[in-house]
Length: 250
Ligand code: SAH
Figure 1 (spheres, rainbow, N blue to C red):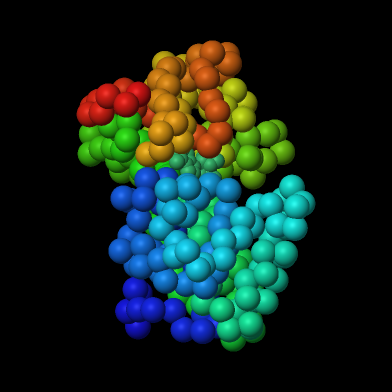
Figure 2 (figure 1 turned 120 degrees about the vertical axis):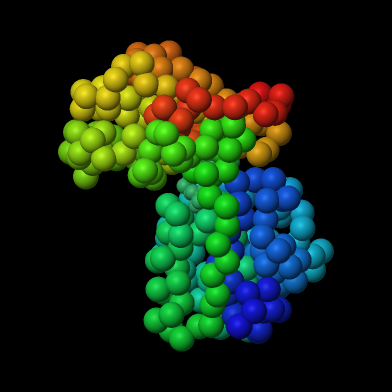
């Protein structure tokens, strides 16, 4: 099956919308967005991407369904099922890549269980795109042979994170959802033995008009001296210190 073939009635495409700029969509994402009956999107999907929908397409913000502040994952799965069973051609649009901290797995399992046809279109994930905008390669031969993508929601004492093991195994750490917990993340890493002078970059709203990059040290982050506002990628490691600035937007 061609990934960019037109959707059939009752089919759902789980589509990665990339970090924000419409120019970073895949060709398959662009054509499915432009030719579907309904788009169900997350809060992180940019207006620029949504503007590519056909005028006839219904656009549903899954985060604000039915006037409630936030739809549960079950509600979103039910909505996708309902739309598919009504014969709609559905694009489920998610920021970045649908399978990277995006709960895409839960949605495709719910569809597969009922025999609903679906396809998966990967997107450029923020953990790679945001550092690139700041001139930071997430791997650099002289720095790291491994790379960790982590959620910043687990930065507490009873978390599943083994901080000393992370520090030993991964010279570069990329945190999603880390802005709100930055101080705590940095403190955990300091306590786990990471050098206080290790460079930290916080890239907010990468590839959008609001993009902003803040650079500092692990010590400054732990002391609450670095500004971090969601959505932001936090990248920690020597690749940050050796970045090459290539744009003047920040
Ligand atoms: N599936 C998404 C991640 C969803 S989790 C992906 O692959 O990118 C939500 C987190 O993604 C945010 O808290 C933030 O850490 C990150 N994020 C998404 N878009 C971003 C952007 N344009 N700039 C910086 N961070 C972004």
